[in-house]
Image (cartoon, rainbow, N blue to C red; front, side, top):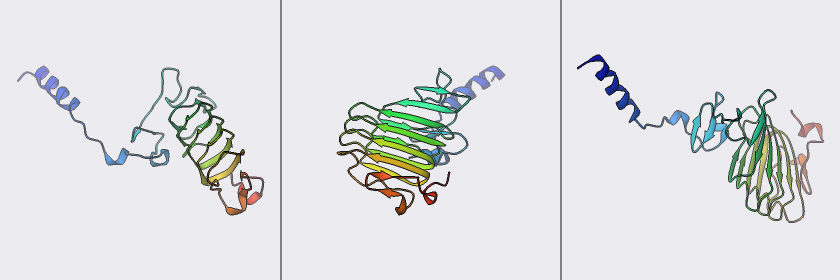
Length: 181
């Protein structure tokens, strides 16, 4: 067999292998490390779009590592970035995952928006104003969390970093014990 044919055969064979490593499976952003992004159940490297932003971002400032995200069904803030998420359409942002973000500001103004929202590690600021928005807000592991729930929003009480951080309408990071950022 010629060397060229052997190389071509090796390349064709390598391209037909479709094994997923368990080391790179994920269900939430926190499952991924090393700058990888959780996408369709896999921790993928890079994930940069043609606009120079992580694919999750509608727009960004790469130097400042800030990411703006407009709606979508499942929203994942890239690890190590500060995100500004806007969920203004009805039924937008079924899942918002801010695990691994340095900070997350989420506006849930659409009717039935932000059904499940998780903030871990970084600072979180969540405004739930849409009727039926914010069914579940979990920021128990966030370094600081501010959640405001308008009347008709937040079907369940948000989970704050500590019980003392709970307010009648959400969570507050005003107390020193509630702000570890």
